[in-house]
Length: 108
Ligand code: FES
Image (cartoon, rainbow, N blue to C red):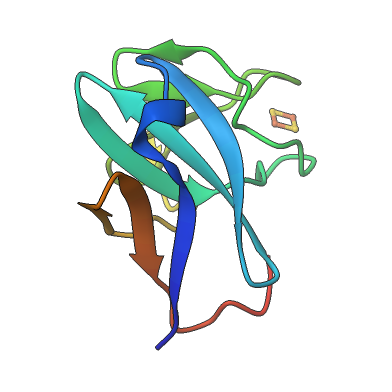
């Protein structure tokens, strides 16, 4: 499984996301309360990137129409409860960079 460096840790801003790529896969990297979260960067509604959305209570809100995703689980948060949402990826912080191992870097 290939490893990918997504960004330097000093490029992350608390409470914000940033786009990254792992092979052909587009990802979003968030730093929230000192924890780094990595998930697919494509909203399930109409495919907007989510990296620029506001973070509220541990969830990112899609900047286009407001769908919300739990940053820890990727679940889509709805008025009817959580639903399957975006893929998340465990990451490592080593040598000042954020790294992930992705077994399917083909694309999203
Ligand atoms: S594209 Fe994300 S809520 Fe519509």
